[in-house]
Image (cartoon, rainbow, N blue to C red; front, side, top):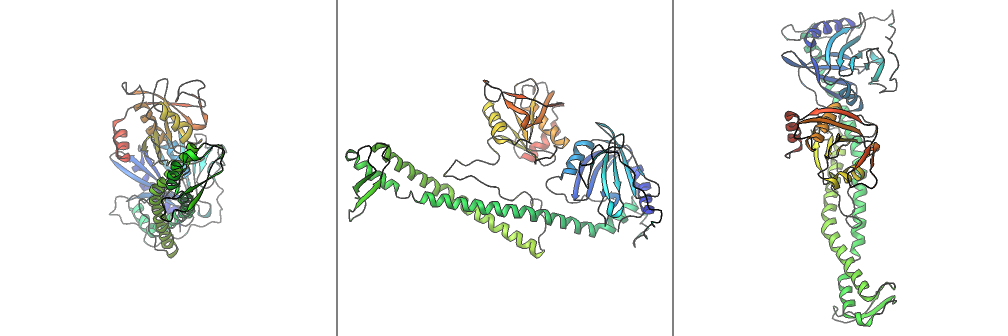
Length: 479
């Protein structure tokens, strides 16, 4: 059961003064229909919860931070990009209704986060200064640009009865928030766990398919290489008979002196090649067998171990015994290339790698060759690309999901790295341009790493030691 209008009025009256003159420090989305704002208010940090779940629609302060998914959903990313750092101008309730408006001033100007805590129609909306919709929790940006209209309240509607456990304990600093947190804690934990289990189940289905395909490919490569096991012996036999073999022969009959019985052995030849080239081919294929035996078998064993772990985790989900861990969404194995058909490729590439404030991967080229490889071979078209403006420096790429907008803090993290690994490092400040990778093109006739860029935006940044230290800590390596 969500809040009644009377309860909501009490909550708003209680927390509005505490939020005044605060600013949005972080944005999280612990469940599909709940967001939490970490707010730095004068002298303290507060956690504001807004739930648009029909069963638990409410707004109040939290005493503890809830668990969050490893990667932020699109609505959370949009909020991070638009209201991170926004000043709180006020919190108010639409009189007599279950609608609350959080008035903000962001870098883009005045805006509002609107919480419609109205049962089945519960939703969260971000509005601009003219009350036009920027995005909604329910429908994303489908209604972007449309004017917001306050829902018509049914005059026959009656407020629901206050739930057991209220009025609140007046000994608490925020008694209404404390009481509501206690009322909904078990239900919210259940919803959070259900959400994490569903998310993990979807990830497991993908990972199981990928891992099974990888095992199948590795086994096929190993089986193919196994055919070359005896090719070193065949090469030695050809080597001993080079003077008897002519170009154009399709086969050679030799005595197999490795066998005590000394039988005759017929070896296929490539008639377009000479004796030496045919011998070299046999030795080359045997080296492929040795490489496959050395490289594929350990990878196959690791993949089979991964598969076993994923199957056990899926079984736990089916039995209802699965519990989330901090790395639940990060440990699924990814596809790896075949050792026989091509050389192994490290998932992170040869580049510097960092993790942003929002948990997204940032890659930085070390030199012109790596810049070229990072931008034109490794990066996806929707990834974010950055470079210090008008000066030599590293290409920087932020890996993004298709259609996702980069969070503002991630942009600033990546821009700081672009500045650090450029000729602007000495000055400690400068302009960084950024755009989607698809708007970056190679400059014809120019050295590797030279590009032309369109549809770029610019950001002025200064080297922030605290920000760099945090990235250093997350990456586990020196900058």
